[in-house]
Structure formats: structure tokens, C-alpha cells
Image 1 (spheres, one colour):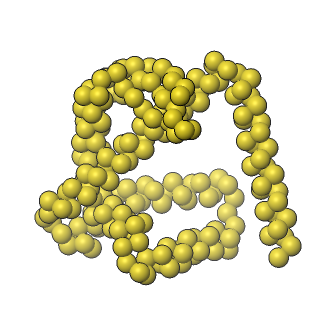
Image 2 (cartoon, one colour):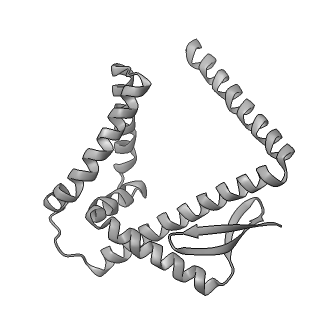
Length: 190
């Protein structure tokens, strides 16, 4: 098991965190589990407060992504296909595509908290809905912590074992380029 110690700062809280690898899976292990749990709870509460207007939408998205109904997978396939068909048909430049995507995000950020209560019609939260919302926010915080942990471990590898970092990056990027080249050839043949 490889353990790399990293200094992490979240807001005003700063602490020493060890990034442990077991069976190739990174884990975040803090100095004190109680302090780590309190930090996680505080971040989850903060995220819940920030996303309160998106609560109903997040619960519905969770149901869709968990395929709780039989027709959710075909609906996801249709929506993703429609988005790619629109992108293919419009053929936007990179700048136009990025600006339209960011504009869509801003519109969603402004309109969803206003429109969602009218669509879903639920002014009161049940304890079950609140618990699900809490679980979703907690999972988002944990995912962010894992991503930051991977990122910190990655740059620690860059500083401590630069040759290993260099070889890993070259092989990874060459593999991605090779797969992309092969998939492009396969698509052009069909």
C-alpha cells in the first residue's frame, strides 16, 4: 500500500491528509476520523444550502439515473441521441459550442429554482425526500474529495517521481490517440 501525505485546505480549514492506495483505489484518510467526519458534514450542509432550489430536480435526476422506471433507459438514449444529432446538424465551432453550453448552464441556474416548484408542485419536503437529497449531496462531496485526492496524488507523483509521471502520461496519451485513430477509421469504413 502506497501512502502519500498531502496538505489540503478547504475554506479556512487546513489539514494533513494521506492519500492511501489499496488495490489501485485511492482513499482519503484524514488525521482524525472525527475531524474528517465533521468536515464532510459541514461541506455537505453547505452544498445542501447552495443547491436547495435544485432539490426537486436533483431528486428526479437521481431517479432517472438509477433507472427506477422501465422507460428511463430508452428516454436517456433518446435525449443523448437528440443532443448529439443537434450538435451534428448545427456543426458549431468550438467557441460557439462552448459559449452556447455555458449560456445553457446560466439559464438553467437562473430558471430552475424559479420554475421547478411550479412544475413539481411540492412546497413541502418529506423526511424521505430530505434524506435522499442529503445522500445525494453527501455523495457529491465525497466524489469531489476523491477527485481532489487523485489530483493531489497525481501532482505528488509528478514532483517525487518525475520519470514515472512522464512515462505514465506519454503511454496514456498515446493510447488515447491510438484508440481515437482506430475508432475514426472504423466509423469512416461504415
